[in-house]
Each structure stands twice: as C-alpha cells, then as structure tokens.
Image (cartoon, rainbow, N blue to C red; front, side, top):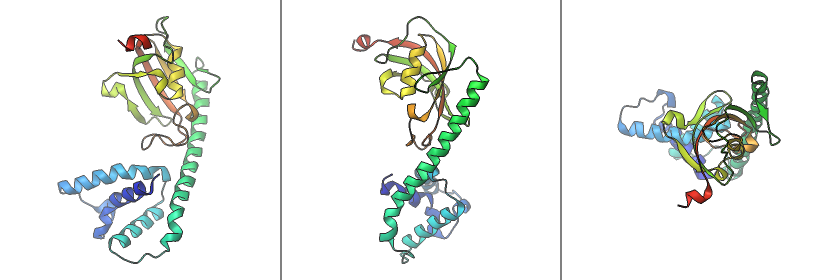
Length: 233
C-alpha cells in the first residue's frame, strides 16, 4: 500500500481526535460531520486487513493528534517510517494465511455436504445446478450472466442478482476460476463455484471487500454466449 493511502486513511478515520474526542463519541450533526465520516469509513476500510487491536488503534489516535497539534513526535520518525511498509506486509501475509486455512476447511466441508460437487485439477470446486444447452462458451467468448458472490463466512461481497442487473464480459478477462468454471455449463445453465485464492484474487485480495488469501463462492447463471466474431458486429 502506498504511504499516502495509509496516512490519508488514518487522517480521516481518526479526525475526531483533533477535538480531543474518541471516535465512537462523535455525533454526526452537520453535513460536514457526515461527509468526513463517510470519507473516514471509505478510507479506513483499507485498515481492516491489519486486524488492529484496541491498543494499536489508540497508538494511531495518539500519533494523529500529536501531529495535528504540532506536538513533537515521541519516536524517531526516520527510524519508524520504513517500518510501516514492513508492518503492512507482515500483517497482510498473516491475514492471507488465516484466510487460506479458512478456505481449505470450507472446501472440505462443502464437498462433504455436496457429494455431487467435483474438483478440477486446478483446484476449482464446482456443482452444476443446471447443465444448460449443448452450446458452451470458450475462453475467448463474451458471456452474459447473473452472479452472487460470497466469502466463506457467507458475507456477500458482490451480487448482480441483488442489483438486478445482468453483466456482460469477455470470459478470458476475469479471474481464472470464472474462466474455467463457466466453460463447464451450456447456455441457460447455472453453476456453483468455490474458487480458491490462487484462482481468484490471490494473497493481495480485492480490498476492501475481499481479503487476501480468500476463497470465494459464486452462484452463476449463464444467459447468453456471444462468440468473438459476433461481438465485432
């Protein structure tokens, strides 16, 4: 993560500390209050991946307040500034490892509960809900689908179904698990995909909603296949 992103996130997330208040005690009375809160919420989501403790959050409060008030830093910033990136890397690796373990457990449990589910050589787990027609997409085709994506804890991170808006995209320009999985059903078919991180967003994830190392579960309905030559018309 770029240093600017970290600093900005902390700045807005804990801006209430400039008034000597705890963040949880701030009352959102004015439009400016609500605007700053919204900015803090959006930027602060980047810090979720660090799994900060209350003590660590308190240290952030103190550093922000001291800097904003012009108080001399209690540590040598030249020494600790390079450690920011190291800390981020270490924390994110830890989170990714934990997410991978959760995913592995989820896949094992999923296959026990769904004996009809299959696992490909790449590690993709799938269950065909509806096979569809004999017309199946190739990786070069463009497809129109509905999808509902969740993390292993059931949290929805993205859903065209909930938005009520079908999506169209080239099948070779999405995550590997989708490219492989959608070729397993025909037009009009429906499939459930459990995608390990190496076939999804890897150890980096897709913040703020998808943590690094996350295994993803999708239910995808394939409405239409548009071969490459048709797309050019």
